Length: 266
Image (cartoon, rainbow, N blue to C red; front, side, top):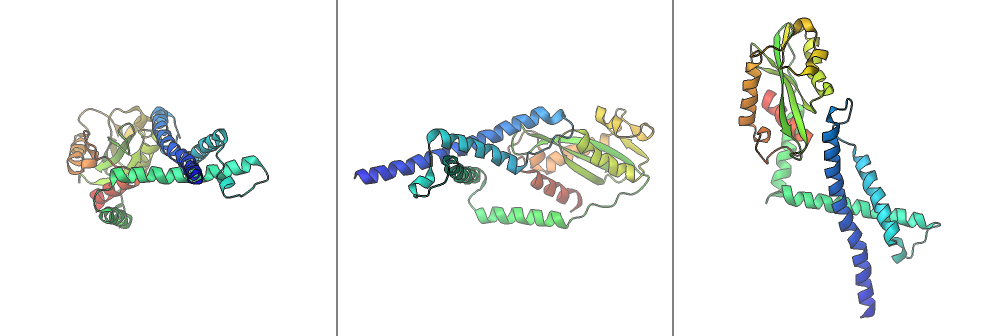
């Protein structure tokens, strides 16, 4: 009886760090969102932090928990290392990987409906269709309107903008980019129009455009972007993920880009 109780205590002592790290990794994601919102105005700041940076933070916290709690998984397996910190590090690697799996499981419970296979098939098909669609060539010497549309990715606190250009005579979307409302995102749209030797580019009064578009072809007067403003309303009506008051916003940049690509040029 005493042996079984001791075994249960050992198992519980190993499970508790997994659960703690799972919730810690979720809190790290929330912290990353806050930092991204604060740093939106910083030039050349990444839209998303790389996975290895997030994992390094979780691994560091795991190592600290293992060290303070004296959790040594390898001691139960009678595996000895030359130094104590090596056993702690290997245990931290296991805990951090396990916490990532637990975190993913929590996320899947929230987003996957009854038919898991149906969801994965739909997502795979959307991505496959979007990869086959090519952006149309931009005609030289035309007049264009440029504007940004606010949306969210993953969380309501994580704002992203869909910047795109509209050919004024045909009302055709010729290019778009998804990212923060910064010079780097808008530059992708403006540069494609400048390469096509655009006759005139109409925008709103956002100051960033003044540093991107030559003054002789730039116009930001009132009522000059009525067509693209009307297009914004159409987009919000047709694509629920772009609606202002919704919980159906995109969970990832890849899916939002794929859906827009299919809608514009599919």
